[in-house]
Length: 255
Image (tube, rainbow, N blue to C red; front, top):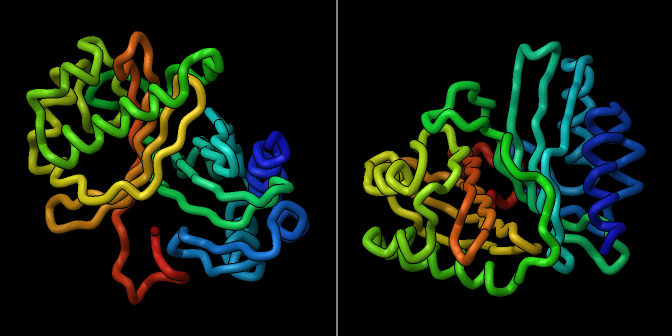
């Protein structure tokens, strides 16, 4: 599915960063383009209605694809965006579903402000970027699935040590360093409840989950990125976005 990875890169770098949204959306999407980024309408015309004005009001667009991976027809992309000389800085995590030719059919995302000072001290988009393709993908996916079910959803915080390395490197802005920092955050009101796992994919030592949590009276769409080493989660990233009221959606919603 190399075409799928290339098409995701191109719609970002040619269509958005390069300002060629119209050419890119027709070239790299398939017979449909179902959209879940709630400010964007479905189809090529929905994409253009959002991104052509976006390009016009942001003449300086620097976009770096930090990490990208695939699992069958699914592609995950994590990007850093700097607009207008750093006047706005964003971190995006995107999930794409593609057809047999690698053309994009469906898209989900979260968009969050880039935070320079994280609680752990690790950069929000820093850390490992190269996928270890020799790692056991299915075993790593199973580990993250059980962590998500038992620790995040069932609240079995006493089991964190079974899944997470003591010195886990944490990149989420609000979570402290190490397993202790993760435990402290998971038991806080800010973490809330992890209510729904929508999709889990992985490649090599990287595993991605996309789901929803509820905290402080808010529904939050959240991507978690895990790097697994030695049979435990060794590095984590998180990107989340509050889900806007249904009346403000431009499509069927975040999921």
